[in-house]
Length: 566
Image (cartoon, rainbow, N blue to C red):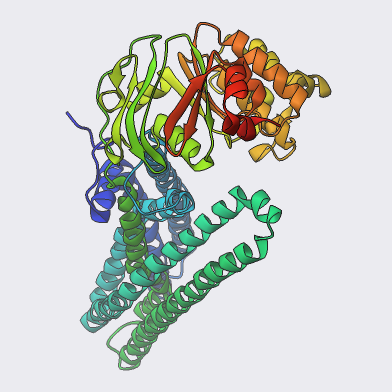
């Protein structure tokens, strides 16, 4: 049976209903305590008016002590109910926001990509700001109910003094909410647009950070920064628009609330002057007119927060409702086994066919970098099986019939631009902490000099994206991670382009030795890696045009010699 936590919400309203349903208990206790707080606040001017009325009739010390004790009880109730009520609500709010962040992050990190037109920076904004604003509904509802309680208690107390005062509060509150509910709709649409533009700016930042080095390399940084400035300026203008709408809303709410308080005060003064209410009731009415400003402010702010929460929930629904790009099969590949590419047509690949035998070390010399990148993408399952012709078989089973998790557990494709994470050398090499071949992987990738260079060794701190490592060190660290995974099938794409020729020669020999008896495919133009392979396949114009050992190809194929000789 599907639980509410795993059930996919259909819309932003479904997300809000799920959040409310999941926190009914916390909201009930919060509503009770915040209701007590608002009732206590309302009781204070009522009690003050009664004390004045009673004191004017009976001026005894006992009455004074009793009055002070009553005020102390009210103040204590107000203080404790607010403290514990907000603690319960804020804990529930934070917990609910965390749940939705995890849900959005889970969608973004699933092996099968979601069919949604959002970049990673936009998904990050949805997982942070939108998740927080959606969870605010947990506080909004109890505060709305407690504010309503305060307004009703104040209206009832004033109605007991004079029916016209009570009716004035009720009619005024309804009129204020009617006006503000219309204004809140614009806040919702403006906020939705602002969140979208902020998300686009965040996506642009993420793209810039990823490509900053190559941008500096060919002088494209000024054009890239100009593009970001344009997106950022649009986000700023929309933020100013939203701030203006919110300011107009807040100003209107304050003006209307003040007008109601003034109307109650003046009406009470006129009734007292006319002798229809007593002095104590006048004090109570004036006190309630001042107090009612706070619950009215909270009450009038609620439509705005509801619209903001709904706008954010609808943006989260974009991610949570997005269908997967492909539906993977349920099967798992057998241990060991070979790798077969059968008639793949995708991008620059034109009916590509080859087979890497189980336990073999095969290298592919790709004359066109685009073909190499397309082949790596297909093998890494970044391209869904239905998006290309032909089949990829692992241990004799088509990838379309296997789960993506199983494929990636069995076959590791290490890209030339693999990410380096903030942490240590050790956590980058062995993120799971379960590898038994870390020392061998460090030695095979020639990362030993980096480890020896620092007193902390493998515990040397690495900055985000390897900012404190050179290009060659980052590449060797990525290679060490791929080798430490010790997968049945390993595919390496240009693993040594940033290292010198001597180090490259040593790495090639080490890979051949460490991976002996395990299926290995290297897509490269490195003579050292090509020479270390059992056989070399030449990939030209999207198909395999030659197959032999590296040395035989050098001796017999002039085009191959020109392509790989350095």
